[in-house]
Amino acid sequence: MTTGPGRRARRRPGARHRDHLIGWLLVAPALAYFVIFLLYPALSALYYSFTDWNLRTEASWVGLANYADLLFDDVKYPHFWKSVSVTLQYTLIAVPLTLVAALAQALLLNAVRRGANLFRLLLFLPVVTAEAAVGAIWRWLYDPQYGLINTLLGLVGIPGQNWLNTPELVIPALAFIAAWQCGISMIIYLAGLKGIPGSIQEAAVIDGAGPWQRFWRVTFPMLRPTTFYLLVTGVIAALQVFGLVYVIFSGNGRSVTGGPEQSGLTYVLHLYLFAFRYDAMGAACAMSFILLVFIMIVTALQFRFVRQEAA
Image (tube, rainbow, N blue to C red):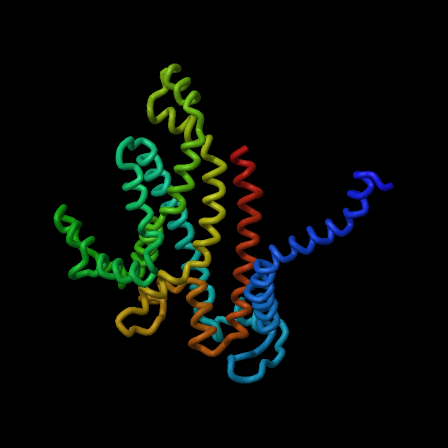
């Protein structure tokens, strides 16, 4: 007669098969989503980036012509490098500004003893506000005649500016909005602050360190992994900025051109215009993969150099 362990051994293959089946059923929705909505569109875009296609006619194979024209033909694509320059300027201003704003808000919230949840909610509200509402609010705030910002500047004797119609001010104005929406980074910084042991801060106080020394020599170094994560994800998000710029420069029935002298023509906004306004979906697909390669290079450089600096 077969003993207990022997009976369990004979049932193992069926049990493993059942476990595998349950596992596949559990991951099936996520796998289907990945294949249908991510992998298939990405592979299709890669194919169409080698074609001349306008969404209405059959695509014709052109090889690397779209990539070569985008990179070297200033006549056919006069604003391609302009959009690259605008996006890099926006990234260089918006990312550090967002990190500083998020860290400052997190430090203040970490020091608050009463009403912290209320302040956290108020600071997080810009993140969950719809892009259309954010664009409408900030178009009013930046309005040269009726905007709140110029009104406040006038109270202290500073002349108002035409923020969204002066090419030199467009990128700083957009970067300030990005810093205003730093709620997610603030929450992550706050979690990092909560993870710093209180004993280290107490030891620094005993050693006579002042508030600035404690921040610069204890708090900030221990937040380096958090800062590195936010830097990498912030750069990736800034290089893909689109919704806010589209809303800001397309209100009141205006056609989207990226602001005065294309000073707000970010890379993804330029890509969108080629895809859906200029009937050049093949070139738009090529632009998307140029951006993908650029983001991969920038991210690799960040891991290569910033991590070494942190170490």
